[in-house]
Length: 321
Length: 294
Image (cartoon, rainbow over all chains, first blue to last red; front, side):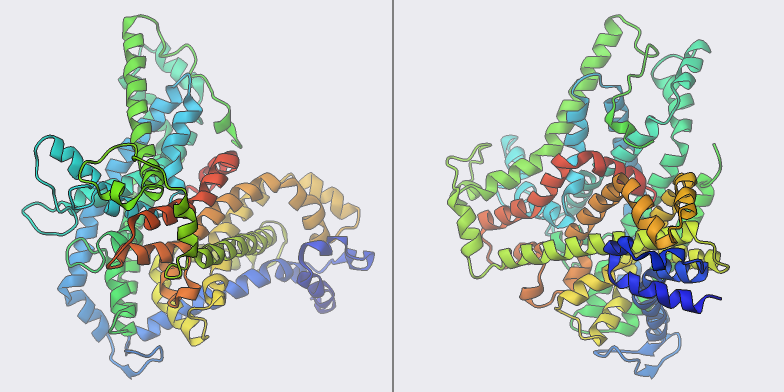
């Protein structure tokens, strides 16, 4: 359609933003196809190379034996998938993190929503409280894990939690060791994740709260709803529906993809090991088993996709309010 | 909704009827908020406290809130300790975060504009192809991406750390949605004046969208600075470590120097705390924009 215009437009791409002061000659690029590719082409090329090719490659690798080599070796059919689906360590990690998701999703949602409501109603120092609760969202999960492991939940006597317990005469707890009768590592990983993510979702819910029109509250008041719990159930929660659905879906996806803090807090332990940590050690550990690693990654992707669609259906994502 | 979070919106007369109950309610609410604020800020204090303490104060069995003395010389120690590549890691992280932020914004906003505004018969198909990449959890593609990058010979190489992260389908998607709402009259006027799509974009659309760019940039920068899995997979040689990988190596090391670890953590979050303090309005706006994906 516009081969000549395409070529006249392409050189401009190389000189990026400053090309805006291009010569008048280039002004009349009428060829919309050329213009479209000028804008979308570079991005699409990158997407193809760094997203599509890896996905296809991983699909191929998952049907091959590929150990210590990134080149498919021997075709093994669905053996990698069967191996992963009968691997008790992998299945265990999927199950553990389903439970982890079921626990962490409502916990984060309730705490973030509670804080958002409190901050929304605060009449003074509101910016301070919003910032104080939001600022951990700027912290990396690595740093979060570092503070939790080496300071707060340090297993020795000088750990902060053990110091507090010591005041009540309780012996130090070896939080992350996995020994003992109680899985003490769960409070550690749960509180770390809460600290790191609550602020982010609090901001989202706060934005949602402020989009609820004031006259809905006034109407509820006129209709005799008591300010407080009744108004919250009948006005606030329905008004937050869209935001809440997005938050809940996001939280579950993120729980399945947990990696950073578990890797740093616990490493490659058989308990509390997220699927991604297991896949990391499968593919990049001593075995360098890309075939099994790819099969596992695809199984995990499929589970996340199914859970997301199911959750979106149940919660009615996309329904207009 | 832009920046509405910044202007406190009073709830109004509703739900604020006077009386003892209301005062009691306010006291309870503020008590909860104060406790929450203390709990959320405490880890930051612990990082600073331990980073500037002597090793003895950190490991003392009699833990005190304030250390007995403050050791500013820990800072020079951290950056001169040859066993810890902290300065190099900071440089790597800064380079990666800056280049990825610019790259994602440049490529993503151009693609978003093309998809939103330039008629092309396959535009819809291409948009779906971009949408599909949003459905695939990025963390799950690390195995095949590593396979690709290692066959390019980019392991332990800044190219491997930066280039695969330049293309964000999500940023392109956000810009497309944003440009769909851009006042088309402005663009039409520019087109009537004879500007090409390219000229219209850079002279009219871009300068009038800077707030949106800033919001996305802040979020992108923080995500790039904090990312861990990909730099861990690719940065195998200490010279290619980012701050997060360096800190992680610290945590899992056999013998650790606690005050150095904590000071390293403090140094690593400093750029983000600065971003937070000075660009918070853009950060809040960015979170609100990107929240649907995270």
